[in-house]
Structures are given as C-alpha cells and as structure tokens.
Length: 167
Image 1 (tube, rainbow, N blue to C red):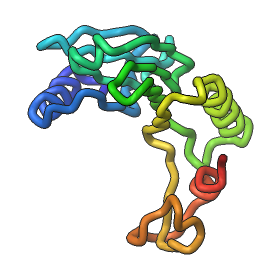
Image 2 (image 1 turned 120 degrees about the horizontal axis):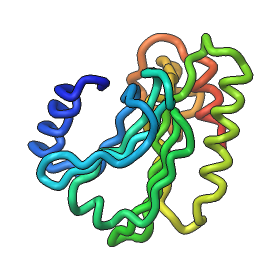
Image 3 (image 1 turned 135 degrees about the vertical axis):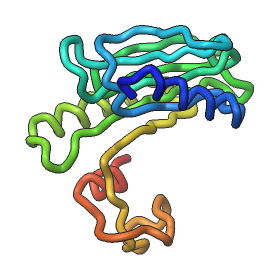
Image 4 (image 1 turned 180 degrees about the vertical axis):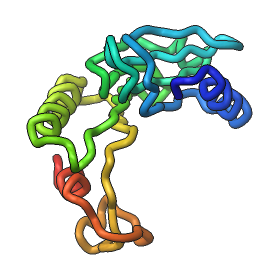
C-alpha cells in the first residue's frame, strides 16, 4: 500500500462496488493523518513516524466522512473511528495484529491496547473490530461454532484461540 498506485487501485474498487467504509492493513505510510483522495474520498491512517512498516487505515466515502463523529489514531497498528448511522452509532476499530512469531510483550501490548479501546466504546454502539488479526481459524468447527464457519483450512493458531474465547 506504500505506493500511490496501490491506493488508486483500492479506491477504484471501492467506488466501483459502492463501498462506504473499508479498512486497510499494512499501509506502510509514515505518521498519521487524513489524506484527501479523488471524488471526496478520504483515508484516515496511522503508522510509525520513522519507518515504513505496519500501519492501518480506514478509507471512507464522502457520505461516511460526513457521518464521522470522531477518529483516533491509537498507534501504528490500531485506528478507531466512530460514525453516526441510521441504526445507531457505529464504532470501527481497524487493527493489524502482531504475528505469532512476535515477542510476547509486543503481542500482550497490542491486545491490552485493543481491549482498552473496545472497553471505552459506549455500550450501545455497534462495534466492528476488523483488519488483519493474523489468526488462522483452521478446520475444527467444533472448537467455537458460534463464531466459526464450517469451511476453515489447516490448523488453528494460538491467536485464533485467544480471539474466539475473548468476551
């Protein structure tokens, strides 16, 4: 996503399919901010200040941008945006989780931060925590059938076990 042409590709698809809100992982953009794109679309993004790694973003249509109530760049792996909608307030938390190979401190910090952000969201909001959570659901549907479909592939990793058992 670090190349402008990648942004243009994503924007073209979003416009073609009339998508109002899209989250993006691994933007690799420096810093944080709001980038104004063509046709009134905007990209809120958050990344490292001095290196092109990780990064998350939320691409919004003009209608979604007008409905935006608040946005917070939490860190290079989490961005939080709250919207007004016809069904109530919608809180989107875009995430890019560390892989299983990351050290335990980094993983713990990420999930503690994510949990604290979600805990601060008003109870009545619709909450969508989305992005690249680096979880493999595997094919064991019986593990957590209320949140897992029947058509996973391979083996479940520890990240998925943690996510599927979180409140």
